[in-house]
Image (cartoon, rainbow, N blue to C red; front, side, top):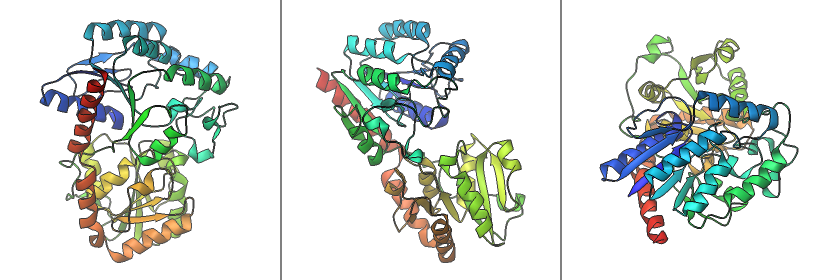
Length: 404
């Protein structure tokens, strides 16, 4: 079996690592595997194919900023890429994120319809079925169900600072993305599956395959971080994000800092320098790290992991923390409550910082050890990446056989 995956990045970030993890298991089983990517340098893939160049990325981004036509740039880059795809002639094409200023969705899907090959499309966010945004729950927008217009998040990713193209984008995507005879959609959560089933993609079969993590990396570890930051006598409340936007709950931690006493310390990982400068004394700010072993050590020494995000299509931070034995507190929003039960943490009403603080306090009063074994067991039983990656390979075999 010959598989081609397409994603914004290769081997970096959560989606890039998912692609290379699948690539590895395919090679281990004797299959032929390729990853096409649009940005940054590839990692952990000996068959990586760059789509376009930095110049293509910049011009695509410019078209987005001015005309709000994200996904409709990169014309020449995509035509050149399609020629390479014809040469490879894969048995199956697996799409991940096809936004990110690197591929033309109309040209890509015209080829997919012409080639009539099995397609698997993993949706890591909601961009595929909206007229602009990748997430909509934070602003409570439901226009995507019937037709986007006057987008309330026009200046959010993928930002447009001039025109609003959400209405035409929605109609174009609806036409472009429909009409494939053998496409299966994968979502990492039941919540996102329900959203897809209410969208213009509802005609396609939707499979839920949870994101998995590397249990050889995320496990309880010893660390010197408490001594390094002189917080040995503190209860550590940890927060982690790739980018600390409002939807990820940055303001919740600022409010929590005013509620906690001197026995507690908040540690936030993934902050910008500007955000670090704004922090009160009881929050330690750390910049984003690609060192996942360092991240696992922070999870391991923390007493609770707080994930107040209100937009999660899965909740990787929550699962990584539990794998290290750390109980979690999350809001009852989007996919987060699917991961958490009373044995591993607490789910609280969305937006209620007072209840979020109470939940943290309840866990810390019970001690981390009351949750540790259950947290680790839940992850090992449900979120081992060896099993989730194998689920993708099983799906490949299924869709290929259905196409014969």
